[in-house]
Amino acid sequence: MSERILIVDDDYHLLSAFRRQLGERFDITPAQNGNDAVIAVREALENRMPFAVVLCDMRMPGIDGVQTLEQIRDLSPDTVRLMLTGNADQQTAIDSINRGHIFRFYTKPYPLDQLGDGLQAAIEQHRLIVAERELLEKTVTGSIKMLTDLMSLNDPVSYGIATRLREWIELLQKNFNMPRRWQLEVAASLVAIGTVALPPDLVAKKRQHGVLNDVEESILERTPEIARDLLANIPRLSKVAEIVFLQDRGYDGSGFPADGPKGDAIPLDARILKILKDLAIATNGGALTNEALDSLRTHERQYDPVLLGRVRTCMKALISGQATAVVELPLAALRSRHVVLSDLKLTNGHVIIPAHTELSQSQIVRLQNLRKIFSFIEPVKVAESSLKNAEAEKTPNDNR
View 1: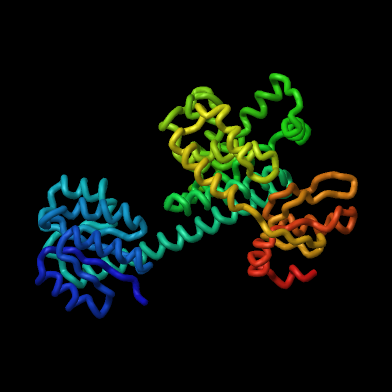
View 2: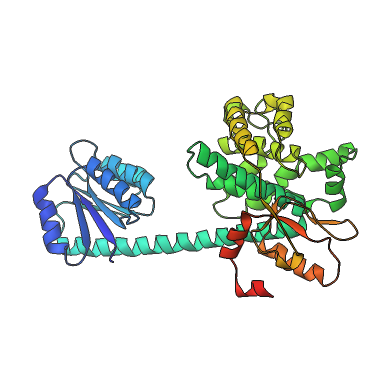
């Protein structure tokens, strides 16, 4: 199907002329005012048939052309915008460019054949924008996957916490009808990426609740800053980097960074992540319990009180219904997306992957390699509910 073009003008006869002379060349949809145009764009997005181009008159009843293009830009940033006006004053041109971010500016009367060439150029621009965005999204997605895979291999404990955080975020979004917060989901996945720059002995000492000296405390405290600097190098992850940077910032102004925002000035996603991360740490790798949930009260001033109440309500419902059917599997039968409910240990007691971790394909490959050298404690407890998810992603390589 050819790219769709929305033409907005309060002159019915002009709209008819557009359709008559350009209709065979383009897929044209007319709108006689700005409000109708905005509604048409919104409906097109809902039907997953967005407009590639919008050509809008300046002077119309209701909202004018600049306001119309401004609203369309907010709704559909990829749609290329053109302005058509009979009043080509300098201020109109400036407003169109600065607020509507138009691609081209035309004055009436304008030969329709030449205008058709302009519409074709706008379509080519739209194709370029979409291709560039898709390439960028694939690059970002691939970068995130690479980082999470590295974390799953380098620090399985942190990866297990990240997996749990993503599950809880999904639950919150469902229970409170929250729109999908992809930046929060990515931040949760990479919340501990900064630990890759820390000495492993220091990370282990912290987790074993060892006594830390001032230098060690300072190094650990600045881990979110390391994470932010790593993520800042990836396109479109600037907000994710900020969320991760503020993961330890308390609502009361406590925590790192000392000069950071407090209260509602802290981004909403960072406030949510702070509560969920502390809750995950309170479980100490075990099941979610009322005791872990109640432990947040010890420092409740560090949390947004409204969000804390919502999280508590949601998590209490999860605790009451979290009885999980368990199956026991040999290590060789484990697959990507299986959720292990017991630690994966060598026979010498060394933990390779902690309990309550959803296995990644990278971890499966690592386990297969380790099995050739070391002996594991078997069988492994796995959540029965995760078996179907793993089967859906099964590939021929899984049958090794």
